[in-house]
Image (cartoon, rainbow, N blue to C red; front, side, top):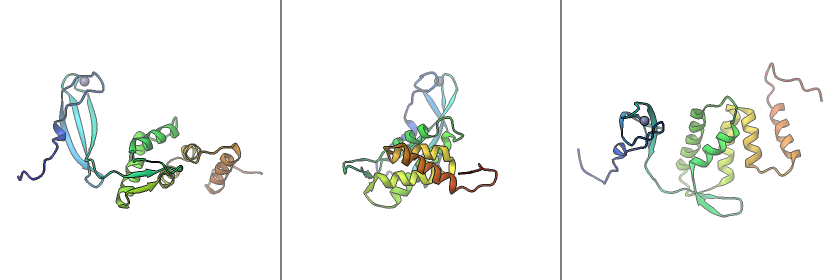
Length: 175
Ligand SMILES: [Zn+2]
């Protein structure tokens, strides 16, 4: 064991139990996820014994998002998650699928090695994945993301989606 760089002892962080609020837990399982840049820990509350999960990520070089109006802000995966949760409301998409999609988009962006990314690219990458997961959620997300200003373009998007589907047992279009 070498004491190389200062390594944050992330497993030692005490967290508030999401069930009872007690601040003392033990880590019962710890494993790397994605490409190893994230550590998933199963924790057990020392008071109520309920289990919860944390994802710990080493802070890396910030990725800057360039918005449509050319303003810039740091990339935030949580925003993708929030947008997806909203779009997938009452749809058969699990939170796990959502985190997976957000994680995929994030690693794709980081792997591109660009320090700046246009917000539209993020949106398209999210939509690509959402389209495969659930079409209704996809249209909802797209409607917000592309900021449709009129119903017409929204319907166009929806129609294009249904036409392009062509799945057996689907709806009959008689227009
Ligand atoms: Zn507890």
